[in-house]
Every structure is written in structure tokens, then in C-alpha cells.
Image (cartoon, rainbow, N blue to C red):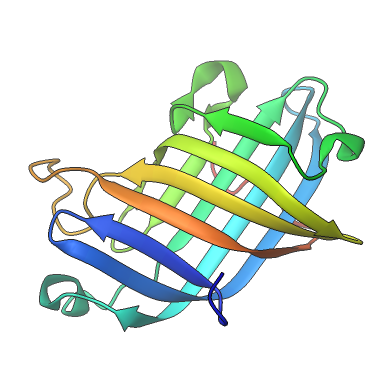
Length: 163
């Protein structure tokens, strides 16, 4: 794991790296759909490695995932926990369950969540997913692969931002 937390975005033209400024999580009962929601949020700042086409945009990635399950408990959030969010939009789980923002909002697909380690309310989590390229939203380039492995801090006020 790098010394400073990073989001890796493997694009059609190579690897871009962004410094993670904040990684937060919460598990709460969503009154609207009656299910439990494991909310994960990653906010990035400055690019560490970037290509000219995205440097011009000046985007700072933000990634949100919501694992919506009927009986998810905090006791289950231990090393070895693994879950998948196959599609960024899932009507059975309340609509939009993922959001990746760079220059526009779009969902991420083929997402995985792996809990590697816990320390009190902090969770070391590895996230993976795929997005439409951040400079080619028409899907004309191959999909970009995302990777985050960092410590997430508990935010009791954290909630899904989209539906």
C-alpha cells in the first residue's frame, strides 16, 4: 500500500493516480427502502500522475458506492468480508447505487468491496470498479478500471447522495 492513499484509474492510454483526501464509510438503516446501506465515499484532490487530456479538465475524482442489503450488520464488516455491486443502477436497491464524478456524474460497474483489516471504527478497504472513460463519456474508448486501497473513517452522518 502506498505511503499516501491513492485512487488508481487505468485508462485506455495508461495509469492515472490521484491523491485521496478523504475516505469515509457508514452503515445505516435506510428508512426509504427498509434495507441496510453500507455507504462508502472517496474524495480525491490533486493528481499525482495524469495525462494531458484529463489535466485540461481539472477534475478531482469522487467515488461513492452503496451496498444495499436487507440484513447487512456491522458484525459482518470484518477482514474477509467481500461484496459485489455489479451495476451502478439497480432498481431493486433504490436506483443509483454508485456514482463516480470527474467532469460528469456517472455510475461505476463491476464493483467489488473487500475489507482487509479493521482498527476500531476504521476499515482498511480495497475497492475496484469500472467506469466509462472520464474524457470520452460516449463510451468510444475502453472502460477505465478503478482501484482504491485505503483506510476509511466512520462518518455517522454519511448517507447515499443519489437515488
